[in-house]
Image (cartoon, rainbow, N blue to C red):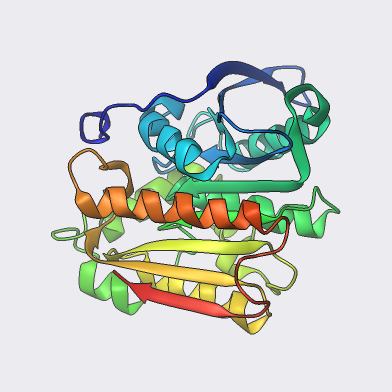
Length: 293
C-alpha cells in the first residue's frame, strides 16, 4: 500500500515520541507538526490493518497531507498488535496517547479543548472505542473524530456484507473481517463489548462531532451508515461522505487514485473549518450531512 500512497509531503516538523504506558513500557509514535501558530488542535491517529498488521509508516503520506491541509498536529501511534497483544491492549495504548497529549499541551503548544481521534478501518474502530471510553469514564473530552470506513460491529448479515462480502469487488471479504476480529479478542463474547464493537453501545449521546468517510463498495459501509444514523438521532453533529465506486483501503492510495486524494483533501478542509470554528462543530448541532462523491 505504501507504493500507492504518493510522495510524502513536507511538514514543519516531525518528532519521534515515546508515550508512557501504565505498566512502565513505552508506546512509539511520530508527531507531525504544521507551520501554524499555537495553540494547535491535535489528533491521535491509528492506522488500519485489522489490529494485526501495519505501523505508523503505513499512513505517513496521508497524515502529512492532512497536517498540511488542515493545520492540525497529528500524533500517529504504533499501538500494540494482535494476536500477541489482544483486546483491550490497543485501546489502552490509544488512551495512553490521549493522556500524553493532555499532559503535554504546554510543552508542544496543543489546544487541550480541541483534541481529536482518527483512524482507518480497525484504526477507526479504536478511535470510536476511545471516544466511547472517554465519554463513559470522564474524559478527556474529545472535540472530533475522523472515522474512515470503520469496523464497528460483528454482524456479517448486513446488506453490504451480502453484496460485497465475497471480497471480489471490495478488496475485503467477510472471512477476512471474521479472521481479524478473531485475532483481536480473547473470545467471541468480547466482541459484544461496545469498546470492541462501538455500534453495540447503549447510547450514542454526547459523543464528539464526527466526519465519517465510507467506500461504496465495502462490506463495512452499512455499519458505518448505521453508526452515523444513531449519532444523528442523539443530536451529535455528523457528516457522512460516501465515495462512489471506491473499495475498502482506497484512503491509502492518494498517489494513484484521484478519489483517494479527494477524500484526504475533503477531510483536511473539514478539519480546517472545524479549527476555525473553535471547539464547535462546523455543522449545526444535531444535523447529519450526507454526500456521495
